Length: 406
Ligand SMILES: Cc1ncc(COP(=O)(O)O)c(C=O)c1O
Image (cartoon, rainbow, N blue to C red; front, side, top):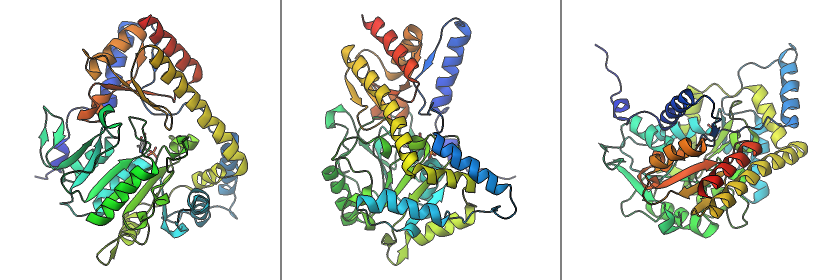
C-alpha cells in the first residue's frame, strides 16, 4: 500500500481563510438583507493599469504571429525583464544586484514556500510571530518543525520571535540559533516595518552565526518613510546572508496575473556551495518559466507611464489605509501599521479574543476582517483590516464601526 507524506497530516485544522469564508457564508445565508463588506483577505480590487493592459495586448498580438510567437520562456526569466529589475529595483537604489541573480517566477508565494527545499532537512527555522503562514506551513510539510502543541499553537522545532505592541513589533534576536530566518518587511499582518539600523542588526547576526535571512518584500511598494529600506540589499553585508522575495501582486495588481521574483546573490555560500546554483538547478528542473505575456506586462510596470499610474494605485490603497487608521483611532482603538503597508493591525478590546472580535464585527457592523491569532500565537488579541477594498466600501465600513462605538 502506498504511503502519503505524513507531515501533511500534522498541519493543524482548516486554513484560516476557509474558516472565515464559512463563517461569512453562514452569516450571509441567515441574513440575506445585510451587505457584508470584506476587509479580510489581502487581495486587490483595482483593475490593471492602462500601461500594463496595453503591454499585454501587444504581447498577445506577438503570440498570434508566427514571426514573433514564443514558446517556453527561459526558466530563470527573460533577459529583458531580469535586466530591468536589476536596474530599476536595485542598482538605482544603490543595491549591488546583477540581472543574473534574479529568478523570475509565478509569484512570491511559490518561491517562499519552495525555497526551504534547497536547505538541509534538519535546518532550524525562526519566524516572526505573527506572520504570513506560508513560511511555517511549508516547513511543516518538509518535516522540519517537530511536534505541534495545540494549546499553544506552536511547533517544537520552530523558533518564534514575538512581535507585539510590547516590543514595537521589532523582533528580538533569538536565544536559540536558527539556520533560516524569515523576515517579512513590511510585515503581513501587522503592517509594521524595520528601519535600516534595525535590519542591520539582523544582517550582522546572520553573518556572524552563519544563518540565512529569507526576506519577503512583497509589500515594498507601500513603504513611505525614508528610513525604511526597500530591499535588504540596501544593507551592507546582505549579499553573504540574504535571499529576497518580491511580487508584482501588490505593487501592480497581478494577484490573478501571477508574477514575482527571487534574488539570490552569488556571494551566498554554504562552504563552497553556492545557493544561487542550487536554486537555478531547482528552478530549471521544476519550473518551466513565467509566461511571455506576463513578463511583457511586468516591463510596463517599470515604464515611465506605468510608474505614474501605479503610484496612483498605491496611493488609492494607502488613502484607504489612512481612513481605517484614523477611524479606528477616533473610535478609541489602539492601532498599528497602515503607514508603510496596506494592513492595519488593531488591538481588540481586552475581554475579547481575536475570533470573538471577528464574530462581533461581522454581526454588528457586517464587516469582515482577519483574526490575529490566525497568523501565530502572538497575534491573539489583535485583528487585521486591509486597505485593499474599494474607497466606497472602506468609507462605509468605517462609518459602521464609528456608529458602533458612538
Ligand atoms: C507576505 C506575503 N508574501 C507573499 C505573498 C504572495 O505573493 P504572490 O501573489 O506573489 O504569490 C503574500 C500574499 O498575500 C504575502 O502577504
